[in-house]
Amino acid sequence: MLRSLFLLRELQSNLKLKRDELERIQLGKLKALLRHAYENVRYYRGLLDSAGIKPDDVQTLSDLRLIPVTEKAALRKLDLQEKTAGNIDVKACVKVFTSGSTGMPTHIYFTRYDHLMIDMVYLRSFLVNGLRFRDKRAFILDPHSFETKKCWYHRLGLAAYENISCFTDAGEQLERLRRIQPDFIHGYPSSLALIARLMLEKGTKDVRPRLVSTSAELLHQKQRETINAAFGISLYDRYAARECGNIAWECDRHDGYHINIDTSVVEIIRDDKPAGYGEPGDVIVTNLHSYAMPFIRYKIGDIGALSDRTCPCGVETPLMRTVEGRDEDFIILKDGRLISPMMVTGTLDYVPGIRQFRVVQESMDVVTALLAKGDGFAPETVDKAKESLREIFGSGIEIRCSAVEELPGENNGKVRAVLSKVRETN
Ligand SMILES: [Zn+2]
Image 1 (cartoon, protein in one colour):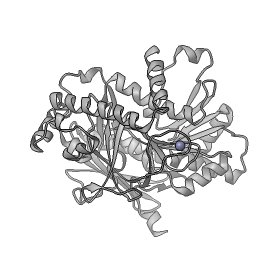
Image 2: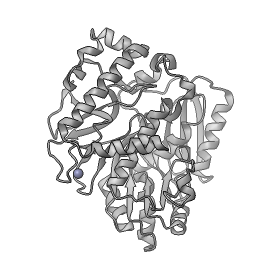
Image 3: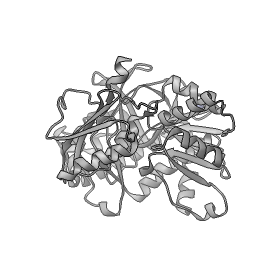
Image 4: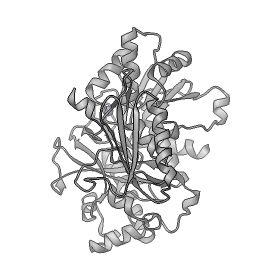
């Protein structure tokens, strides 16, 4: 408790620093992480050795480019012992699942301190956006990522929160919101947009949070407009990933995302060179608080652009924007419900024995799921996958699951984990 307050205070005071002071903190943390990774993580020692560099060769931020970029797929293929730090007990770490748009489930490990850091960096941005300790909060998320801890201040009615599963029907989620009457709602753009659309259709005006926040998926302009109109607010989006937590966030100017440069390094790379300001390129992230399983120059699979503007809000961290994100699609059910790709990936991630998957809606009546066999695959894996998909799709659609050794076209560039042929022809 004290540790989190102390950490939060430190993070909050960072936002008052000048840009050069922030960059000094960033560089200090970067050097420490590189030394740690080189000394304790076999993969990074090999990577630096093969590039002919030592951690001490990185003396400035631009020296970071001496280190080769690591792709998601390359990291996924490694044994746990190769990509985690030998001096950290992984069993004592916080384990997180992720697959996102690639449909390649993998585990990520954070030390308890680094995981707390992720929480506090989120909280910092919520507080800047106007969150108060007395606010009633509603989190509409994948139930696997629910926070269930209750602290002493919850018993005093402070920071009270309710979790709502985004896997349930949008109408049900809206009912919960009406009952809770939250001051603050946080969720995925796709889920909140579905609830918002329903509210607009029904003319619902009795859910009036003061703050709405989104993250984890690319927020489309249309979704932003729908959510703003339904809740009567101006939502705050953040750019986040499981591997790196909250990378960048919007302030009340809503004109670009402030990069948390005291906890991460964001580079935008185009044709192997840093992209110019405003020029789109691959987002490469270094999570400065990833000591158990370091993410150093990690290609996250999104396209973004850096801005050279300084935000008039007074926070001097640099600004960025995302251009296009995880290339996914919605599944459309006969009753009109839309199932977000995140629900599908979030569900299959938790079925053991699957190395990669692709879910395709062939028609209004049929969804197929190809499952590439992974460690721990068993004949019942296919049934388990089918059952878990049934939970989110319901019984109105046929689900065909089959196991394969390799997904077709797996190595041809971009992989989409979820796509709908119904949508494409509409
Ligand atoms: Zn700002």
